[in-house]
Amino acid sequence: MNDTLVKDASAVGQIAEMHFPSVTIWNRVEGRPRAEAFDRALRAEVRDALWMLTKQWQMGEFQGDDAASPISAKIRFAETHLTKYQPDGGVPASFNDERPLEANVERRPIPLRHAGRDLSLDIRLLAGRQWLKMIAAPPGVRGAYIAKYPIHAPDPHDPADAVYCAHPETWSSFAAVAGRAMDGVKLFEYLRVPGNHAGDGIAGVNHAMIEAAALRFRRWFTKLIFQPISEDADAWLPERLEYQFSVAAPEGSAEKVYSAEEYFHGHLDWYNVDIDPKQTLLGDPIAAAPKPPHNRVTIPTPVTFSGMPNTRWWTFEEGRTSFGDINPDTTDLSKLLLMEFGLTFANDWFMVPYVAPSGSIVTVRGMAVTDVFGDRTWIDAAGSGLDDDWERWAMFLVNVKGKGGEAADTGLLLLPSMPGVQEGPVLEEVMLVRDEVANMVWAVEKTIPLPSGEGKDGASAGREMHGYWVRRAGSLPAVPAPSANAPIRYDAMRSVPENWIPFIPVHVPGSVRRTQLQRGSMLRVIEKLPEMKVKPRTSLLRHGLDAQGGPLPYFLHEEEVSRAGVVVTQRYQRTRWRDGRAWIWLGVRKQTGRGEASSTLAFDRVVAMPNQTE
Image (tube, rainbow, N blue to C red; front, side, top):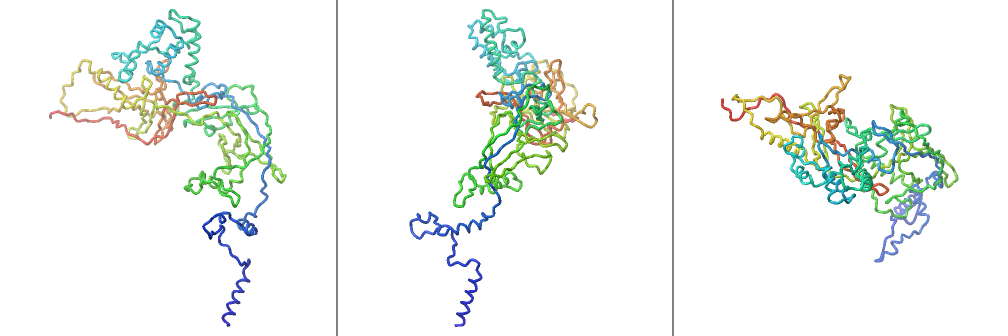
């Protein structure tokens, strides 16, 4: 009896100490089916509405602040447009957004000649066929144009034609069309000279009809491949192995100048340019003035995305985005920020749409937001303050040049660039590597352009060229061998493959400490032939060799070739602009190499002579 009373008193004490005494304890949220049918269990019936409120209290949903939703937003912003474009060292011109900016910046001249010999046979034949198709001339007139603008016929006995005859596929291609096809590039170059006409020297033609066809032909060839009209329009800097250009837009009484000093990636966007505060004018001033700031009232909408966590308790998210499958490392800040945004702050963001044309610069001065409670809040543009402030948060804003203390620019730059570009096969590929043993930099021509317009492996092309000169030496009279019967031989220098072009360190003019790299030449030493300098075959390395008035030296900044090396490629690029027109140009790409290399270059060697008796 006493034991029973003690137990009952203990139970009563435990019930009295409970803060929320209850007869029924729930340990499951979902229903438990007790029959074969699941219809009632899937209804998720709630018997006690107070339970829902307590669950919300448990999850902290009642611990809210004055988080009102915006109902309207009044934006104060200014808009201006790019009006000028200037390649580095060139003349400023009006900005043209009717073509992609990549095509305007990356375009390079088509290599049409190499040491005075014709190149790009495919383009020459294409232009010739187009001209003969335009005029629809009888066979006699066609033959006259073929005779006046012929395809070069390689001569195996002419040393200047070694660029053709050293490669069997090139020799056969030129020999097959020589005298049978027309060189359309020669006609185009002839028509570019003032005073020349397409019917000059051609008998039996209608000059009025020919002149109209010549005008269409020049337009067709200009649109075929977009290339710079002069050297000043080329933004490629050979001494830097990159593109440099500037664009400008009116800003008040001056201009806002954006400069790109290291562009070589292939996709042009806002992060490739910087604002130069010291340059307030690009060329001559223009009469165009920026639009005055104006206001715009919009309704903010919540930001949503697939798989976004739903804020309602009894709703389920879609499975399109699974944050559980994201496996970020400790250094993957972008993934961590994405998860933080999607799981914690996804429903705190609102979007105010605004459509801006390409080539424009939109600067938000501020925004007045009105919430559902009727309160109005003024919001300054994000990223305001100093440009080098490490606590400044901003996205898609352009950096401001300077040493510190410059005010940040909050303008959003929309360049008329393309999201994607198709690339053709590699025509030229040069690998610049450091050779610590030889204490120099080598430019290895991995791919060279053949005169036929195709690319060829540089090592194979070098062996074929060397073999061509060896065969020419074999047809010459033999040179008497030295009578000395020595067991050893002294070699002053060991040679390298002909596709290895040396760059030798030299002093920068006016400095005894700074150095730069200068293009050199290796010697082609073949018995019975005079020594010849091996010149590069790619247009990337032939800068200055084909200049009028004689060859010019080519200098390369030493810091451009790191220890890992550099790989530079040139190929045709193609894209389609917003008006449906296709643009084709010859562009250059640069990327990091794969490390150092050894050329096996050696000097002052003693080599044992075979089959010698002591």
